[in-house]
Image 1 (cartoon, rainbow, N blue to C red):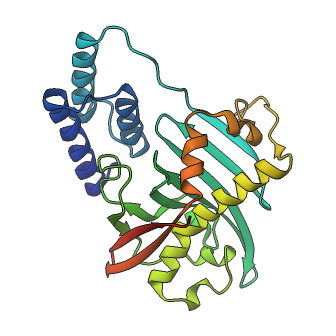
Image 2: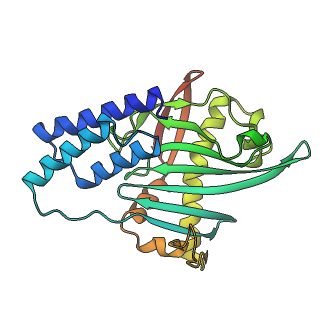
Image 3: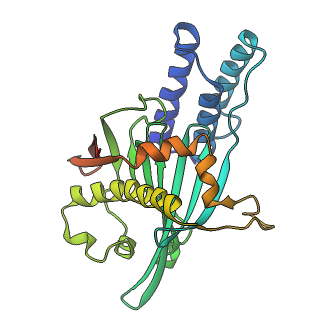
Length: 268
């Protein structure tokens, strides 16, 4: 079920699109697809007013421009690079790069997936953790938003500073990424969680430049449409986003236990 924060984000996103229908700049088809994707990912009902308003916006766009160019389709890539097995999803105006980590703590084994979503300019939208095998079995399959930029669907994509929601208590399983992670100040941990995404992108691009990547061969089943990770080189959405993301580095300053400020500076 959609949370209060998700409803507030959806309201701001759709109000912005409705305003642009009248005063500009023009609304792109890809933005509507991304908005619908946001609603679906956050469990909004298809019968909700949010989907109805998006449909009204769509109808107005079609009335003005009957012939439109379809956006690039979603694509799913998988392969091994930079010492990790990675999954990369390319969708309309963003990419989500996911990496798995596992380990043992207190005689218990665990495995998590960390996902970084990057916008068109390579800025982080969110960092999420999925418990594939939690140290507490009741959490298996659960997802936790470690850091999520406020209003990321609607803010300008080349932002330098933005407020973000942060998880007040970080999952213990982060020790699988770095054993000493909780010895660092909280703001440094959050900055590291953002920047590890940018660094993994850089490592991925370097591997793609210098050697063949062990890819995923399409198979039948849930991942039957997964493409070799090496094919991301020619993805018209993902390639420029990854190039931007690899050049960036962020700092994080805490505002309170639930919010922080994220700031970017180019590394080159």
